[in-house]
Length: 146
Image 1: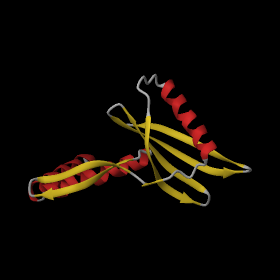
Image 2: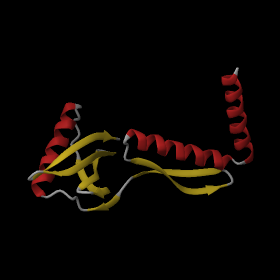
Image 3: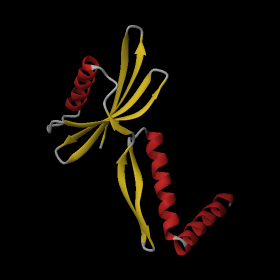
Image 4: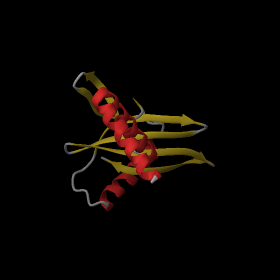
């Protein structure tokens, strides 16, 4: 019974928000989508572009600030080889073209970047984390995010 009451309260609240402030519901949905994306490790977020009495216009963005990679030439080559290997594991036929790096965070010698590629007409992102380890740098690549 308590679950049914909670469900009815949630539905009523949603209906009231839709009737009174449709943009509030859209804003809430956008915030929830961004929270879920962050929890999943996705580099994509929704960003409000415009808002009017008919609704909210959003676009998909990529986290981070555009700039150079923190990797030196040798490390960048090793990361690119790993990404190419991951693409081959997924049997991707269209080659990637690197379009930009985005710095997501840099703390205590640990760097997290979004490496952004074009694959045909699609944007593909691999998340790269690098941390100093002994005389070198360890890195981890996750993705692809499309």
